[in-house]
Length: 460
Ligand code: IFM
Image (cartoon, rainbow, N blue to C red):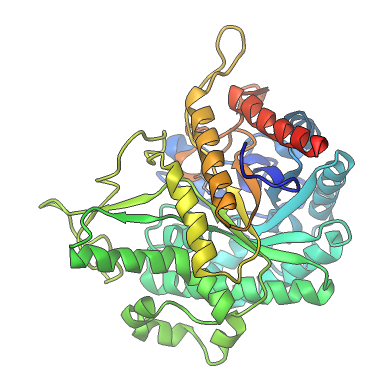
């Protein structure tokens, strides 16, 4: 694969609630996703993460699969309610012990761990007090982050704080399709600010324990494509969406400010949320920018029946998301747009030259391929998706993007949040009845890319 340097990190990614299962074992507390899944009508087929891939009991087997794939690094998340069941200062040692075993097993197999501290499983007790809309969650998160570094910082030097704070904020607190299912603009704006503050405060708390850490966060990012550039409303809308998704958290940690267009639209509300001194506190050394990229987003001209997406004034113009997107599409209905990844990486390099280490912390596609009679899973469209995105990433490196790592989403089929188990993103097939794992042909293709890259390394 062209473009990738010798020391490139080749990884796979997962998250705790999506794979671990053992939801109430060894003292783990209830998370907002346990509560959300138990609420009728929230998740497809009323599915939940109670068992998921049972990774909690099968992590050794899963690490052997990673070894077989040849990955050099593994991005996973720690479940906050496993370690602090109520989100306060009372620890559950058995939760810490699980991650201790996981990390040691990874290291023993030559795989570098990259933990994410928050991939959406907030302790329910914190949500009962407002969750990310409550400022107190910022301090609770910083304490949890520091405790994780105290426990594992001797072996783990790279950390991510939050995964996709845009989803936490806008899917969790505005349109309510994710846990905790709140629909309230004030809560959403508070979550947008508190997650940015949480990244900064947690980073400082972690560095106070160990100064040698490299810390980042993972943002879902996209390139917005506007159907008609001459349409002023659509162009303004594109800029608002770009600010809300791509710029909010980056601008916060780099400059201690938020995009002006959003500050203006939400002036009155944000005035009550952002307290004196907060903006300065947002700015924090961030060593790794994790980019979760799946597809470009297409903002189309409205049809007669289209209405403003959010009445309260966030997206004030009627439009049609992805209406103008070219195919093909994945099972999520997301367009396949590999060139967009190259453009996004080059945009990051151009707009934020201070960022010296980009990791693609997630990239992948949902396609439902099952084992054939011989047991083989020939997921040809996933192979095409994977290779075309890797080629795009390689071109971006050649043109100067400081991309250091790639994590395929996901190691294995898992619980895809509100979509349940129907949307399969794995390089490894999981039979959710027997929990049998089968490496798909995409997993084998990825493995060949990694092997070819290490052969190139050996030749030099
Ligand atoms: O499964 C999710 C993951 O948890 C966060 N990023 C997007 C993935 C696919 O939807």
